[in-house]
Length: 429
Image (cartoon, rainbow, N blue to C red; front, side, top):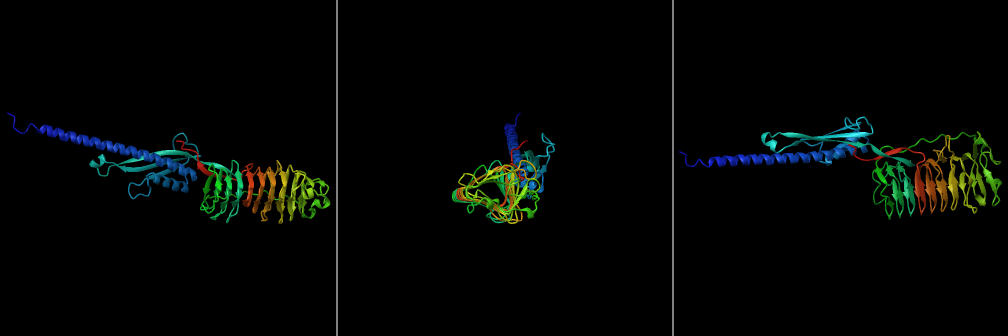
């Protein structure tokens, strides 16, 4: 005989069982979903950490600091009081397709994550969640404009002037807050602009509709300033230096040649001449530069405006060395075209100024200058003014560089003054 009141107990027990089962199933689903989310966050943290480390030199102390900061921004905090994350860097990577490639950095990010369902059974239940990523080392930019002034303004552009570093970068060694200034519709275009200074890029230095093109990568606070080794000075006997040949050809429209092997010069060492000063194109003279090494000892190398169209003729295979206070001046309206030696110690260099000399190299109003080689004047300022158009098919080394009043300068990296690591291309694994 069935007892009254017992027929509903099975239903209650089944309901409790099903309820517990459903709760456990939902809780497990929450755990799984939470762990999947944590795994996605771990991958983002690993990707960011690998990229940051690659930008900062790989598996180094600075690379690890950058990687930890990047992981922290993605929820994996290595400084957390509990359940702290870990970031490990390896270069080359320890596994995968790039395990033997030193140009890659591997970031492994891990963090213990508390669960919900497992926490019902064990309050301390955690699951270690981690991810791995590999990034290429930084892209490099060849430097073609090296400005060695340690303080103050190394680079100044104003009044519609234009500076283009074609397929190369500009490096300014100044640590000052005004290391670079652009005002009044000036334009700068380069692959990179790197500065030792960490705080110049602001509205007080970039104003008046001045523009740094969007393709120019700005890198502040670079750790390695540019300081290329200068070629040794040419050998010459100062007692054999002669006066400017222009003194013998002072009549307007004179035609003559200067340089090694010419009548008014004393040739030394087969291809070297030394002048106390040298005027080219003065009084509308037609002056041809023969190939060789020109030492300007104490005076000025001066290119004058000439009605005949050019301040100099010839000028192929020439190298000028300015010393003992010598200076370079290119006058208003001068038309200058020079090509350096193609081989030897001074290959690719048109003008070199003694590193002890600080006289400004001046390219004045409206001149047209083509140097198919570089200028090395590490202690001097280079000033280009008032509509002058200059093309330097080679590098520029100076203490500072200024362009003003619609002047333009294009520099290309025929020879490289060093490279700068400035970015990473992509995550590779």
